[in-house]
Image (cartoon, rainbow, N blue to C red; front, top):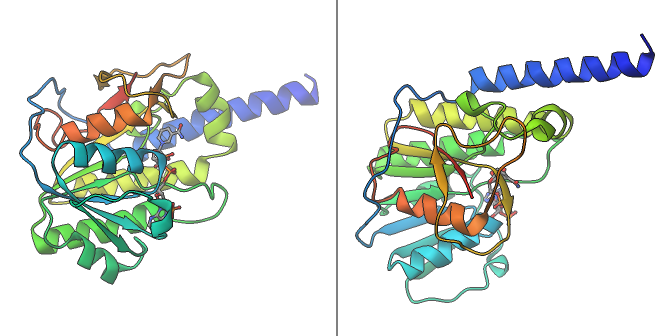
Amino acid sequence: MSVKLTLVILFLVYGAALSAVLSRAGHRDRIARGEGDAAVRPARILVVGATGGTGRQLVSQALERGHEVTALVRDPTRLPLKHPSLTVIRGDVLDPGVVERAVRGHDAVVSALGHHRYYAATSVLSSGTRNILRSMESHGVRRLVCETSLGIGDSAGRLGLFYTFFVIPAILPVYFLDKARQERLIARSRVEWVIVRPGVLTNGERRGRSRHGARVGGVFLSARISRADVAAFMLDQLGSDAYLGSAPGVCG
Ligand SMILES: NC(=O)c1ccc[n+]([C@@H]2O[C@H](COP(=O)([O-])OP(=O)(O)OC[C@H]3O[C@@H](n4cnc5c(N)ncnc54)[C@H](OP(=O)(O)O)[C@@H]3O)[C@@H](O)[C@H]2O)c1
């Protein structure tokens, strides 16, 4: 066997093994969930990751829905939005004091936390989420809706072959292992939670509909969804118990 072929086979074995690790490390649903009533009364919502692609959509759509929104941001200039129902708090999710002050007094937290330092040994997702959960538990803030990704826990392998065997093993192993830890922390917490696992994100238009549940995503092809539709689905989870305590996938 040529050296090149051996390397390709070894890489594929590594990709399959990483998928198996992510499958065990992330959250696994025990109960199949279905449709629910997504209507929700206006609430006080903290958005974490508010300057990101999904986060900006969360902020603007939550305001459209009549919620009072607080955005936790590191750099307020990255959220160029003014609204009477929007409060911006400057701070880092890794600072427990800042997170505690931000979380206090809200009905729910919606998180689209993420970063692009894929090769750095960071634990921003899990450490930041630990701070959020601790503050929620100590201040009686009930519900957390958190964006992670297809490819973790019982959705391992459902981000398509290209992601399962190339992107995740070559570029995202550290990041995805941190996402798996993040999911485990949420699933073990005492808050009401919904983990939302999108397919590949786009900046496309909001279509106002999505496929969601335990079986969405593809083993062969990568399913996509716009950040706008992910945000809409996440906000729907504030008023629905259909996916409470579970981790639906969501695709366009
Ligand atoms: N890209 C995809 O195809 C894909 C697919 C599935 C799931 N996802 C996941 O979906 C999530 C959202 O992705 P996205 O591309 O919409 O968002 P994004 O652009 O990656 O934004 C991430 C947000 O997290 C914030 N953040 C990072 N570190 C922080 C810290 N220490 N303290 C406070 N805030 C911090 C960022 O703030 P700054 O603006 O200050 O950096 C930003 O607002 C991510 O977890 C991503 O991995 C992505």
